[in-house]
Image 1 (cartoon, rainbow, N blue to C red):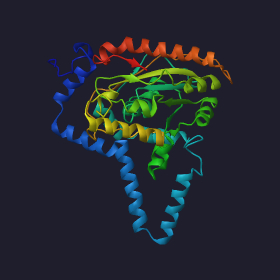
Image 2 (image 1 turned 90 degrees about the horizontal axis):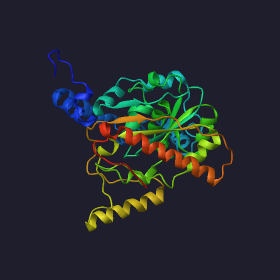
Image 3 (image 1 turned 30 degrees about the vertical axis):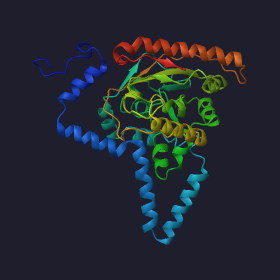
Length: 349
């Protein structure tokens, strides 16, 4: 620290993680405790548990009239009768702005020292498909930097209206459904994505999906992308650009059981995870700890790859732009891995 009490500049450290560890060493125990409690309350999987528990409690103590209203709410939620998740979500601008800018989201940012790194402008008059890699367990880097306002997305990309696509199952949790709708989330179905993009709105999507989530482990940056081309077809059908986004540190938050262990028990758990993924279309990674580790998370947003509008693209056209996207993604990683990559190499399968 300098004589004036300022933190050293990032150039004084060999990597972003080293800088973050320096900041952690100077944090007071009270701030550490506060941020851990905040994360315990705001971590999405735990939020789901809290909201479901609240619903069950209210249903149990409610009068017959309110119990009937809760039952009607559950039916609407489960069968998506109001169709909000699969259309435009809760699209009221002031509501999204208010919810995305709530003070406690900045606590999440502080937990990871989240950073949004801009490398190029995004044209606010055109739709963009922002593709986040890797999936991680719950894509916390995406939430802190791209979904919410805690990393100044609106200031860095003025005029860009974006929604965040997530699993349909996320909208089957009572009250949590309304919470994520208010924060600009929509379902990730093809029809929903096209509706948004054709309306001139941008969408944030995680193409790696359930399979990529099962390979979340520190020291890895493994992307399941070579066979995933649906997002390119969506881009071509809507004429939007493809924007690569790399979440450095995403896989460092958790360690889960994978197929690399020689243990028979670990292999059995891995096969169970794969079976459930095929059964439910989303994965159930078995973690070694519940709370995410405090690691530096930096989301680097690359230059948009312009894509022509082709309503019914051939396989050759899809393959061409998929290849261009993968090349742009590799280049973006190479340009930023020295400072943010923490010695981890990119692997695309």
